[in-house]
Image (cartoon, rainbow, N blue to C red; front, side):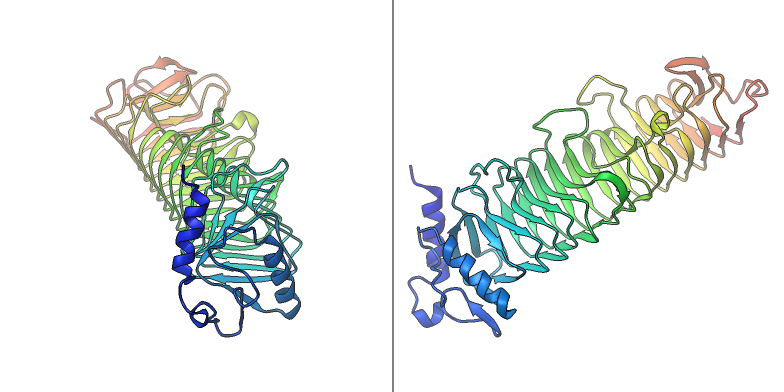
Length: 447
């Protein structure tokens, strides 16, 4: 069997000019150190870690950029010094994992910048204790720009306490997540293409809940699996956990095993303008111990549930759900549960101006049993659902206003009062609501 690494290095050697005159190989980007002139050989079958580490140290001390000509460079255990500025030819300059422990590690660097590199894990196992193919911690300013990261046997990019940006890069084939970022210090993840990952796309988390302020915008994320199983901790295209003040906007997400966007115990979370299709569970989720969620102007097409702002029992409260389109839901999910709900909310939430179509269970669900307080559903359109609007009317629930909605073609009732899963009042528009003093149902059109 032909060894893939030898094929890659051989082809890359041709692409890198190993058959060309030395002067063609050694052309240097102005102001940069050419790696070939320092002794690195594109396409060589030999491990070049020692030479690359020495070159990185030299360039760091002088504050110079390194130019890596086209070709493959087999390396393992590359350790970035205080200053790194490494430039390649996009899609052609490849750092190929040699199989010893990890590929690239940076810890405590002041500035790390990679442009135009392919970082290739070759699907080879990473060592015990290595978290990712590109692993960085405590980096004040990190830039990954126009890079390609493939074949990681764990996380492709694993960051801890890093600031900076990951942009215009292509990440695929990670066994775990494409990007895992913990305790970030002003991170921006913008304009990347992420696909075919085993357990997650972009994961932003903190080990203790607090301000994070990561911005995730303009990315394409697709084909995210949940190989490690579970009921939502894996299989999410974008997952925010314990990280407050995060913005998730204008991403295009397709085919995630669980959620397109999932906020878990994430306060002051904004989820706006995203296009989400083919989500296996709840497409957009704000759950558990959060305060403050703005979910607006998103499009959800094909999911088990559409949008959920829930878990009042765990302290989840305070949000708005407005201007979203949610359609084509399914009663089948990745585990036994309740699915087929367009929008569900529980506490201190306004649901306004949404359009829900083809929700087989409930178009809009207000509360769950005793868990409902201060909810408003007004100015929404619900079409061809099971029930138009579910509202909890068990004793002790808080106020709810249901007004000025259009509900069309709901097979099992327009506005229905529930005690948990059981139907208590089939039609709240006809029955006097005086016996429910916290509930106002008015000016709705049901046909």
